[in-house]
Image (tube, rainbow over all chains, first blue to last red; front, side, top):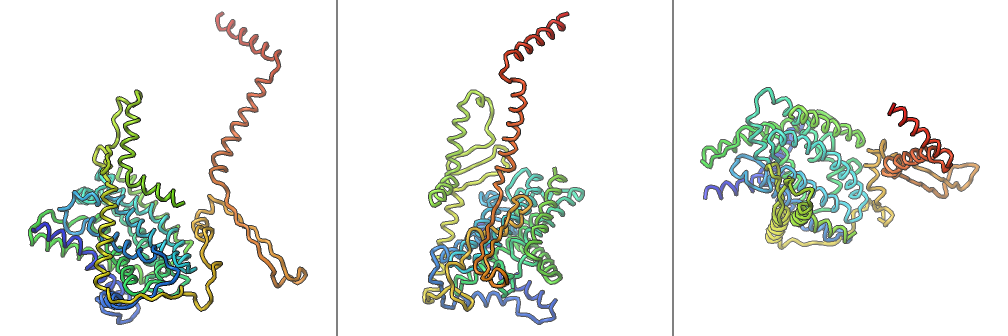
Length: 309
Length: 197
């Protein structure tokens, strides 16, 4: 019974909390811009509003456009249920593999790019092209940063990696920090944040993520936006739990679970603050300068791997 | 294209079975009889022997299909009364034509620009003017984009050059002149004689 309850929390935690963290980022950014900003719960109201609305779909849309939001949202739910969040009870999960998680993220990106091109809008097409370029360049840094931990753990299972990283001594921690910085760069690229993309922009020529979902409205737009929020929280969770792996519980006691949940939220909030500060303190890079940053992420990961071996 | 996509999906889903069949074939060869396979594969699981990684592609597929179906039906039930209207693709105030759609060239343009050092793309412009003297109003533009065949220029061509060079060298030794061959035999006999002494 208890384990069913913990399993349910594990599955719903990402979709339930993800809009909140999007709201927190927006609130902090508003603070930096001397604005009051909307409430941190505003994304919940936005999603609710979108689910209530009727839809306008392009007459040129095929089944790819219509089904992509469901597939992308489902992928984020699957990943959210597979990654280490607050408990290590479900370490036997076959989906909790580093490569499975990374390529499920790639699958969602693939469908997002297909949906962007499907209706034949030039903006959607160019955004898909940019997104696939970024995704191809980010993958190396993302996999290598996590591979540093996988090599230390001799396993690509995310839970084994967390367990191994938590038993590392202080001396072996600098490579983990290097890998974390590489992961942070890859995370900003994957989740469409500064300096890679502007999640709040409405200027078509600079958009990547937003231009791909330009044709969506109503419930499908809500699913797309919600999936993007889920993806952001998944990356935050991976960032804090893989590189700073303290606080996960192996016990199914209520107190231990609540403490682990509190610690998880605290860690994610700190990383969220870091992302918001980064977003507010730098400008968006030119598109063709971004590969340099992603190459830096890859080089940092390779150094981390060499130091780990 | 569709056949290739279906094939890749098939080999992805049944990679365990395919790998299992291939490893059985390899194992039956006398050379690899004593070697232990690095992984174990069956229809449902692909696993490295030292527990480094394991993946179950049918499980991923079934999970993806079932979660997508669950999301679809849940959203469908919750938003049953919402209407769906067909409209035009957003055209920014102009009339969209097929020429405005992104092409494969346009799609791959950014990644080619990023890797221009390796791919070395070339552009050629040909402009036809309304009046060749004034050269202000253009009548027609022709752009030719080209990318070097990487495998040809970095792998096959150098290999071909190397083989040609070696052949040239061999040709000098093996010229078809019988007198030279007799000279070689004579020189080797002298060398052998010196070696024996």
